[in-house]
Image (cartoon, rainbow, N blue to C red; front, top):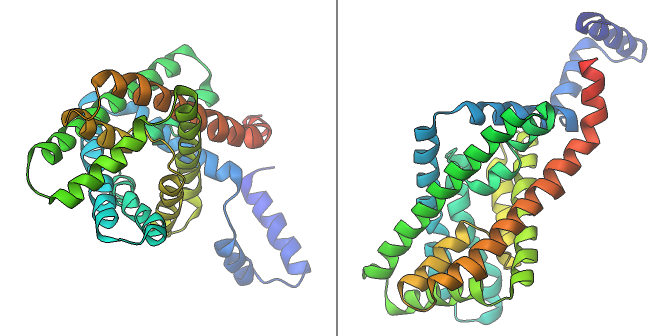
Length: 287
């Protein structure tokens, strides 16, 4: 049965039930998109990302890394301004959301978004050519994101833009990135990867409320003190540049476990599970 005959059958059935064509259109406009439609929307975006020029990806990733510095800046401002511990614990994480809002709404390339978006084309094609494209995209985005985080951390660490109280808040936030052991950091990173990839899954269904989804999901990441490879890199690089931590700590205690956790959380808990719920429907559509 083709689309026109399906639509005709649906309209006929609606009329028998006392629903006019105009009411049917209104119902369809108010209905939520199906999981399969969300999947295909994200997959189409992933296909476009895999076709982008390498230099465009690098520039977009660098912009995202720089923008994530805003998360440390605003959260540090809140942390320094609020004296009550309970209030600070609830309000300061709002500052963490700023960098993500700029990156997501500005369509900049963030590594943790790519644990979902290009994975759906890979699950669809299931070939080495697509895997190679995904790994290339991951490498370019991660490298440019990290370069951006170190650049903005260098400026924060070697200029007097902010006062001592705010700089102390930056240090306090940075210490959280290296205070856990490998497994604890990896688990916390798994939660962050899951939440950010889940945020990307939800965005196509928001119908203009994307900013609210980004704010809520990233607020939860900050409130739970979950480890994010790019936002955390700004904080940890700040520690290293002020000699409060070594580069070895940055790499072994923060970077490696956080990267692994983010990838596992994003690809396993969101990409694979959400693909699994629509796989049968998509395979049926191919036939």
